[in-house]
Every structure is written in C-alpha cells, then in structure tokens.
Amino acid sequence: MTSTAAPPSARCHTVLDSPCGPLTLVATGGVLSGLYMEGQRHRPAQETFGPRDDRPFGEAADQLAAYFDSTRTTFDLELRLDGTPFQRSVWERLCAIPYGETRSYGQLAEALGSPGASRAVGLANGRNPVGIIVPCHRVVGASGSLTGYGGGIDRKRALLAHERGEGYTAAALF
Image (cartoon, rainbow, N blue to C red; front, side, top):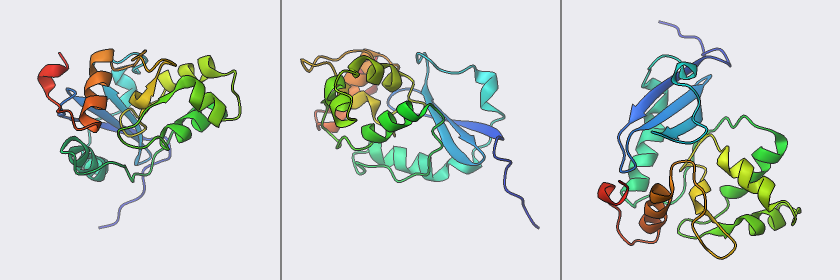
C-alpha cells in the first residue's frame, strides 16, 4: 500500500483532554499549526480546522502529556507558524523563555531590537496559534503582573504555577 503526503494546505484536527480542558490541535499538511483552548480569544472558526484525524498528532499528544506530568520542560515538534515576519520573530523568541520563568513584553521587545515595540509584541503574543508549546503564557506585564492571555488569566496563572512546581489542578482553572 502506498500513501501520498498530505497537500501542503490540507488541514485536520484532533481534540485532547488536558488539565486546561479540551485542547484542539490542528495540522496543516501534516505539521502542527494550531493548539487552541475552549473559549480562547482569536480561536479560528471550528470549520477551518478540517476533518477530525488523530494520526498526525501522536508525538504532540505524547509531549503535551509529559509536559502536564512535569516530565517535559521543552517541546521538540515541527511547527507551521503562519503569521507576519514580526509575529514569527516574537513567537520564536517566546520559545527561548525557559520553563518556569517569565519575561515582560518590554523585555521581549528589547530582545528583538525594538525596545519601543512592547505593544506590538503583546499583539503578536495574543495571536500565537500554538499555545502552551509556543509558551505565550510566560509573558507578563512590566511589574510582573499577569496581563492578558488568550486562554484566560486563570489558565495562565495555573500554567505558570505548574511550571514553578506549585501544583496544578483542573479545579484551579475554573
């Protein structure tokens, strides 16, 4: 039996249970291109996710399970991050924030060589299509306050507590 690679634009999705609630993973051309939470701000319409097909998501599911079990602190997955060049540079910088640490929007803007662009960094952060894996939850306000998170501040608080080893329960999210 032969199989052909999925066309570059073919999309499919699966839904995984997690301590954050159901996570919808989307693949485009067989490559992870989305991870969305229920009620997430900027979540694309469900009909854009393509048919349900669990096959492309085995490694992502395993790595997410290990993350939630506290046995994985980084992700090693191929990603397809569709966005502007500036957005992609912000998302790349997010991946450099170590597990259990945070950075401010201003620190990210400075690291990108645009110290006055903290608002633009915040907007790009909010459009991150692959939450948790591209750890936008690790970005905080200048004072360290928990500011905006597409998945909700309670989820952001819980993800950061989880990464700091302070416990993590689904009850803390809702």
